[in-house]
Length: 137
Image (cartoon, rainbow, N blue to C red; front, side):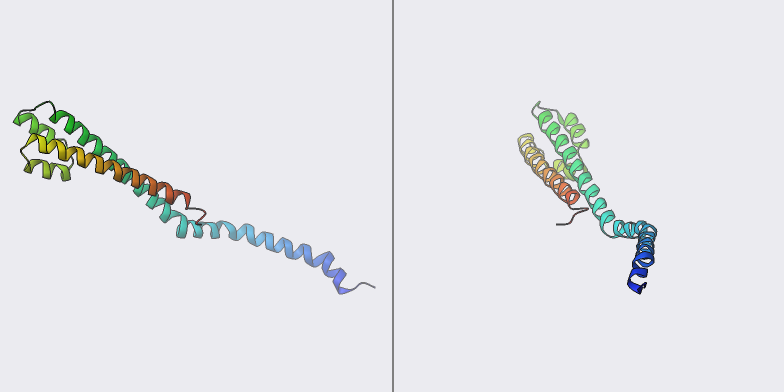
């Protein structure tokens, strides 16, 4: 006597497991793309933005360090204007207002240190976002 349980075991379980595996094979790429679009892509964009910000701060800090070094060489007015023109827009604005070389050098050193700290912080946040992109714990 064949019961319906043995028939189900012989025919039903392989049929259901085959249907489930086929459904997963078909739908998994779509689910994964939705997951990436919703969770991974925005975090990756944020990580890239923070990394770019860190590079910009690092570049700005190096320009300010060079500016401070060149100010130690006692430049004339023409050379000072050339040095100021090589700075970023934000730094150029405050540097054009100041005429004292010692004050300019002190401010350039302070701003360079601030840019280095901001660069480190932005790089740390970019790494933090990168660590939590796939596994947000």
